[in-house]
Length: 185
Image 1: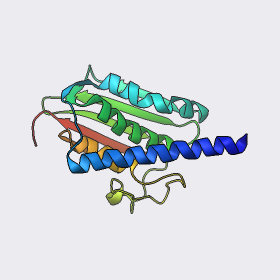
Image 2 (image 1 turned 60 degrees about the vertical axis):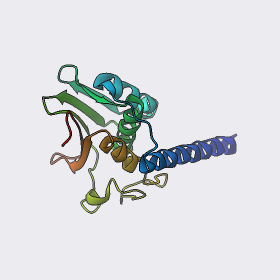
Image 3 (image 1 turned 30 degrees about the vertical axis):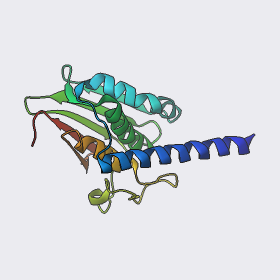
C-alpha cells in the first residue's frame, strides 16, 4: 500500500513537471493564448490558494488576505491563477509550522499590486538574483523542487504587462510583489 502511494505521488509530480514545461514552451514560442478580461484579485487569490489549503492546514499555517477595495486588472484568470499558485506554494514550503502567509492587494491609477509575504527564513542573498531563472534551485529548496515554478510564474506575469520582484522582509520572511500595469510601461 505504501509503495502504491509513493508511486502515485511520483506520477503526480511527473505530470506537473510535464505540464509546467509545456506551458513554458507555449509562452516561449508565443503560442499561448492569453485572454484579456477583467480579473478580480479576490477571486484570483481564492482560486490560487485552493490547491494548498489542505497542506497549509496540515502544517498549521494560516492564509491572511487583506484587500484595499475590490482590486482588478486586465489579464488572463487561468494563467494568472497558475502564477499566483506557484508563488503561494513556494511561500508555504518555506513557512514554518504554525506560520502565516499574507496576501495584500490594491490598485491605483497606474497598476494593480498583489503582495505575497511569508514569515519563513527569507531568501538567501545569493539566491535572490536567480530566483526566477529557469531550473534554478535555491540553497533552501527541497529535494522535490525542479526550479521551474517561479520561472513560470514570472513568464506568465510579464506576458500580461506585469512585473514581479522578490525580496526579504527586514522582519523575516520573503516578499513577492506583483504589479499589473494599466498601460504599457
